[in-house]
Image (cartoon, rainbow, N blue to C red):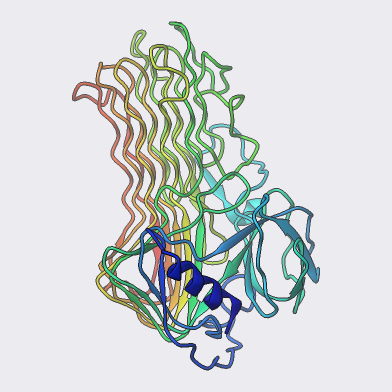
Length: 444
């Protein structure tokens, strides 16, 4: 018996709780296809050596994640990674998804769009492990691309024969933590029965946290030091997040923070740009956080939904209001997808306030589907709503819609890529804008 099936069987025998599996007998492993899709020579739909799985709980995570600890150049036959104290199990022949969703970029503060190809971000490939010693995996074939430490991750991809997600059950991803997570990757050789959900909503880039200030006025800066400027939402530009990344200018697809006095945060971006935050309280000046950039993505290069920036606050305790997280990513290889369930990568809603600036909505995530036939209730990568400001101050911008790629038509699995609504301040947007619609690519 495969070690994974033994471990899962024992786990469920002891009590699965909200995370559970029902394991079918292992089918004979199919011969791998030589078809190439995406970054580098994946098997068409996997070889099925993980057997069949029925999901019993909600937010079940079946992937394992590791963060690169050393750079890997094209042609490398090994990769080094860790999971921050959690044991990783990688067996010979396991399929590994190698991805660099974030990095450094030439795009400056306030840029309206980013091309992932020009910035050399979002690239990925699939390789098979030859062996693994706990921190280094030898590969069966060399890498085609180059990947930077601290910006790249490796994900162990389950290869099922059949996968069933019943109603009220769901598969999800480990939330992005700045180094790894945020993505659900699956290969299913004989078909996915989806009546529940694949749901990575708000599992992407992290929302800006508010920093309480004293009542100040007159701020204008794209870069505005705290506490006069609020924190930006996290972006694929990895050095642009944290307590020192403040001001109304977006940096990449993370929304800008509002500035004094009480301007709203901007929404995150992905397939569509995020919406701008509302005017300031002092004189109604147009200094809300700018929306995060739209990303030019493709099946070969995609990333996570950008996060919303937070609004400038002086009455709300530090850290209690945030911008919305961006949506995560789904990469799915399946011979067929059918059922009444949904694939969800929605952006999170921005935080609401009473007398301050609210948090911007997170952008929808990315979904890339390689299947011969697709039928589902919905494929939803809508942006999150911007936060409201009940006291009439700085409402926030909505998150942009996400990105969807499918090599098959989506007539029987409609894509929802709308941007999130802006927040309101006592029934008025006061300059807060909605997120822009995202983008999907599929045959007619």
